[in-house]
Length: 196
Image (cartoon, rainbow, N blue to C red; front, top):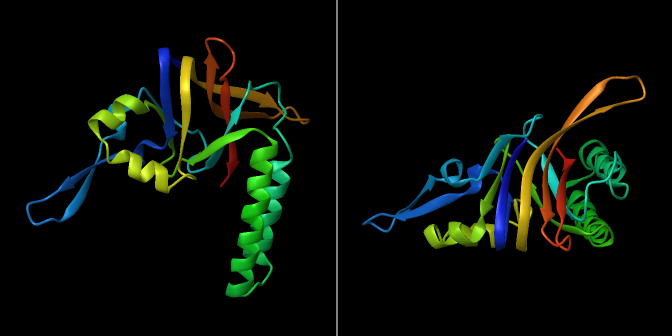
């Protein structure tokens, strides 16, 4: 378990470190990017299961239960989208309908945001300090809300936590989480895998 403390209110960024890049403009105006996330992260850990998507929920991680019925909703969508034989136009409409269901789920279940871990890693950054050094990161975060979440005005402890659970057959399953415990208890958060 890796843990860091934010003593003063800070904006905290949770994302895959591969998305944190410095923008370099050459003399010819050509733009290139330099990955800096691995060097700037306060926490930078493996996700255990590789590439996945995650929700950031407001509140505390309690027991084994996931908020709402997300797993059922997500896998039903995934199967129907990929294997139902829908045409391209039908898939577009199906996806638009799905986005509305997802937004409703997020609202009803206190989801602050989401992120994905395309490189199989998850990282935590002091977003305020990161933007002072690499202001171009804001453009990416603002335009890719499914790739990064900013938890605003957080003071407290953030930790990378691996939980081991046993299923009905006694098999162990591990899950990785980022857990934020705020100093005054008003801004707690936790992450749970939300899809492939």
